Length: 207
Image 1: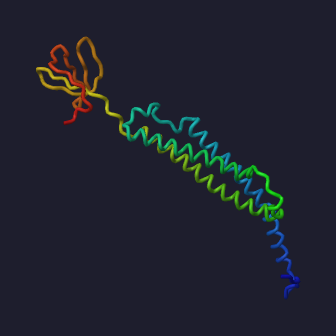
Image 2 (image 1 turned 120 degrees about the vertical axis):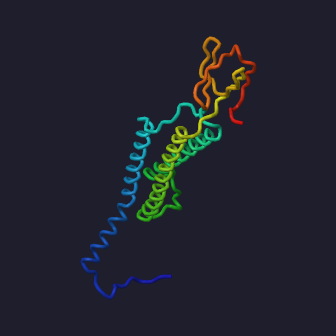
Image 3 (image 1 turned 30 degrees about the horizontal axis):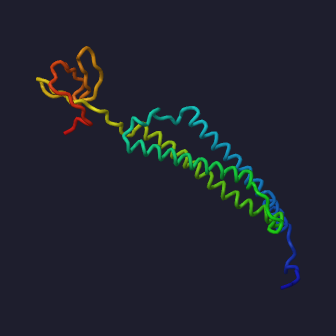
């Protein structure tokens, strides 16, 4: 199908020419602007994570083995999710800032302005996804650290000791010259082991 271009019913006004010039300028610079925004977001989010981790603003217990088993597994899952989200988010931000490392086929190359526009759209999409995943990484890190601090601690093995004075059950605090000090629900209680008729290891003192 062929045709010819014809002038419109009215001549272009200075305002029309100004709008056309502005639109052309936006199209010519949109890829550069998206790239610059991606670099700024990448640097800013990287600095945020470095500050949170490097300056110990995010720091939990050194040993998650102190947590009960289910909560310790939850911390591990949160840390794994943070690692995956952070890695993918970083790759997307790098993709948005610097493009895809590939050489296009000569048969599929678009005209310069159209190619830049398509790349700008793709870079903007990668930028939004990268920001979202990086913030998710931070959220997972905070959740993992909060769990290490506020999750329930693993129950220590307890001893149930039977003496003529009665039965005492609690976790071991210390042993000193035949006297065993247990931490019980009523506080620390010292028990003379020489008078004990039975010593039994139990998981908990309940029941």
